[in-house]
Image (cartoon, rainbow, N blue to C red; front, side):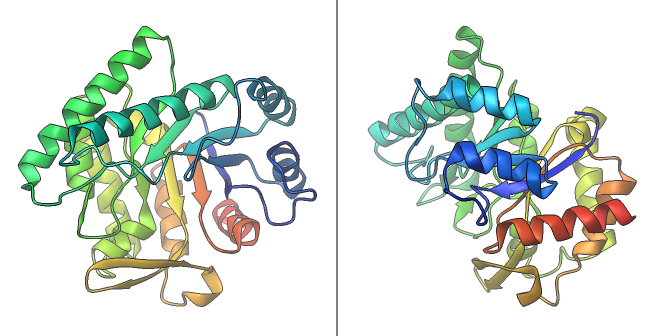
Length: 277
């Protein structure tokens, strides 16, 4: 991509009637650029409907991403659950591709009783198998494990950068609010955001900054990390302007998806803040 796009995690709240087709058109009406299809409970777009979604998104020039299933753990004790997780990721990627979409994010794993090193090896093997299948199917969708918000989850920034550096067609989905929660508030100023982007560039290369899928919203956290998402107005400590400046200064391109409870209102605040810089 050659610029930074802003959109919502799911159908904008102002959409009437509230369905995917109207949601894409509403994104354009609002002056936003992207829509994340929420496949978190199930893939709610059929193979038959997908071509219509693609047609509308292309007509309205709205970029589509998706959030994969919540029921994924590529480090499950039961190997059948790992296989089921892989199938869920592949199913979402297939439908997203049919919709003309670009990138799928998902929470990849929990440590459970495994060490960090063991979890890394298990997740890497599963992702390599997923990507091998996608390549065989000529499916170009990016596969993106998302940065963890809770300490019990696999996927802090360092882990995901190491993971994705060794697997084709994968990049981390960087949730900057999760980084803030995971760091117990430390990642919340221009210097810290710049460190994150520097690290991405140093490990994955400058092209990674042109190919970003991000989540940004207010967040409530405790000693073990993320607790809940917040609206911007309910998170007065969040220096989101510093984040927008870092993204601008590093010439980042890709998609910013807002997962705030007040979807389009906060997505527009972020976009307007960025555009004023």
